[in-house]
Image (tube, rainbow, N blue to C red; front, side, top):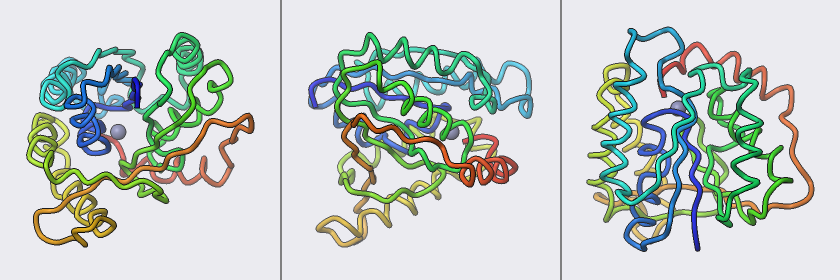
Length: 232
Ligand SMILES: [Zn+2]
């Protein structure tokens, strides 16, 4: 991977979904840009000032995962990305000037509407770019993986990074959830899920001329799941 662009919906998704990969990119000195898309404000469900607090938490987590990454903050409204008139133009502009061949992005069938909105927006914007590969990661919804990354050696850093997200952890035990998912994913490594082994799962897709369009069933499921998916 020569250069990477990473799209992150909310503060904490980077640690849960691709924290091990970010750490690996850092150790391999791969130039990386990380775009935090939403403001992390909780969409009106969290106290005023939460956006600033969570941005600081994100910076702390990124300092552990990839201290050299260039951080970009779009601060689009949390919980409203699928309706944001700014999301698509920003993605198009970003991709038009993007020199990275790989984009790391939430899985398009993630049932959190914000996560999915970024993936579907990316799909539509790929016509404007020279990106060759999209590497989807899982946060809220497990994906059909075709790449497994062993992250055992980065596990303590990944866990420490997630622990920076104090605001999110007040809302749910994401550490436990992340540990469960990463343990399960390690079943697909040589460790066969033995104690102390963890992995992240990805779906790699080559960028082709054919674009996907978000199906209605997924849009409806996203709306149904919105209730339980405020923070992550
Ligand atoms: Zn999220």
